Image (cartoon, rainbow, N blue to C red):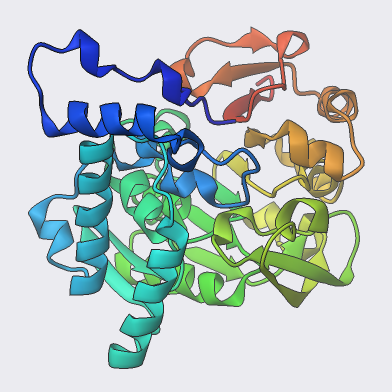
Length: 357
């Protein structure tokens, strides 16, 4: 869950000895009756977090920005200027502006994908998805959760990336595990699964497998919901992923135990789960793999979506304990292992869950 400042906590004009454009703008806001307009939405929809000020603190390098079509460069500059001038916490209207830019860009250039060189990484992006800006930050920011992989993966290991999205974790992992390791990416959104495949092929750093399917505790065909504003909140549960404008896909669903030839995967295994409430079901469908190969987990704790799926925090904790997981680490310090019984799940975040070795 994002921690955001209330608008009445922002710097006031009276506390400043210099009248800067930012101070003036804040003063006008405080007296215009428009406070709610500039604040984070009271009834947030999936993808609102992408347009929060905390996600636009880092500026793209000129080398990266130059690779984007000019409309996307303009949007990035507009967002930074907006936050600088207004001091606002949310880019109001950002979703609509991005959709307009994406539509215009598609009509003039018909981009199926955008391919960028981000330092050592090559990444293929869906140009219609505003999450592309978050992917760039994930692969370039030293504060990104992706950077934690270097502390939990070694050459010759395997990453199973469940809910790969654009493949930030899969791409970074391919460079870490090398030719002796393997990266498995599972992503039910066909456009994104193809983007991940292209990225892993272009990086050519390790063997890889990409599966365009959902995974859970049963096999068959299932409805999958993708919000219009972001692929990152897509999932199986309408109460989470279809609360606002969305598209409905019919996708296959399989058990990880049946999908993968997991006995042949090299090295130690790390399973990364970002599945918008389907964590319990995914683990149930991977019991054979877990009991035999003893993988560590990088799992997104998401209390709201877990409840929507019909499972409780206690249910997930009991399953993890049943599977012999005994400790966890916050990503801020993966060297510190805490007893699993101390895990608090009321804050959304990624954690590492450790199997005793």
